[in-house]
Amino acid sequence: MSSQGSNPRTNLLGKSAEELRAFLESLGEPGYRGAQLYHALYAERRFDFAAMTNLPAALRERLAREASIALPRIVRRHSSPDGTVRYVLALAPDSGSAPAGEGRAAPANIEAVFMPGEKRQTICVSTQAGCAVDCRFCLTATLGLARNLTAGEIVAQVLVALEEHRATLKPQTNIVLMGQGEPLLNYDAVMAALRILLDPNALAISPKHATLSTSGIVPGIERLAQEKVRPKLAISLNASSNEQRDQIMPINRKYPLEMLLEACRKYPLRPWEHLTFEYVLLGGFNDAPEDARRVAKLLAHVRCKVNLIPWNPGALPYAKPDAARVEEFRAILADKGLRIFVRDSRGQDVQAACGQLALAESAASSPA
Image (tube, rainbow, N blue to C red; front, side, top):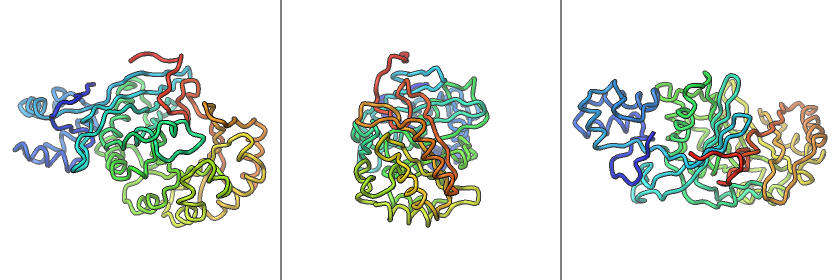
């Protein structure tokens, strides 16, 4: 895998089938060559033009001169004994096509996480470098927002993780847009990336195995509802009242619970689909029995499931709830008829768990 750095050649990573067709036609090639290039890049995951044997040799040589596939550079791998790998990735200044008039994207470091399982692998993907939403319990918020990622930079995280583990991949890949950033504040690039990730002719990830997590950007939720191709939707709830949510999620002042839950009730779920509500349990803050009862009331008329996530330790003034408190919270919600799951995050020892992505170093790491 290679990164082209400041090379001015056209970066093809993140381009759709239609964009690749147009690019090949601009070179005087027949349009169907774009579909062949699209398949080689995304379905076969070939990142060297010389290896794209479905293309004529002369075209491969020309692409090597005039185009690039700008994968990010792995700065460091942080590996956990449970198999989780947190990647720190360096993005090149020209690693994706910037919107018209914006010029080249600035260099940045981001993180992605690979989590192997018995029958699947899950890849946690960032959509922004840093984050501007400022959730007070999340270490990523301490970074602030450097910039939005391009579609190519989002897709590249998946490609890097799959390529690193090519020899041991399981049949199913899950994608969760739960890394750095708020996906719905980078809507166009996120959707362009998802159309490639979910395309049966590209990475062929099922929409049932892709999840976008939002802090509650209501206009983005309403826009996502209209998409023909879309992932599952997860809402980061984390509080049982506006007063409580205002303290830990400033975005709630713009999109309060009433507005957010109304958008959720109107969201057009597919027959197999439930909304997911994520609730980070902060010891002594939002984990009381009365919080659980309020949450049950809030979600009473939404087809959903709830993921309870005990807070993952970090340099922030919160505490992990004790196990008895978590079980009491779970039992109250279950008794109200809600589907409840307790999620103990993997990779905590290498700062790879939910809310821990802040480009931190770790003793349990290995250089790239």
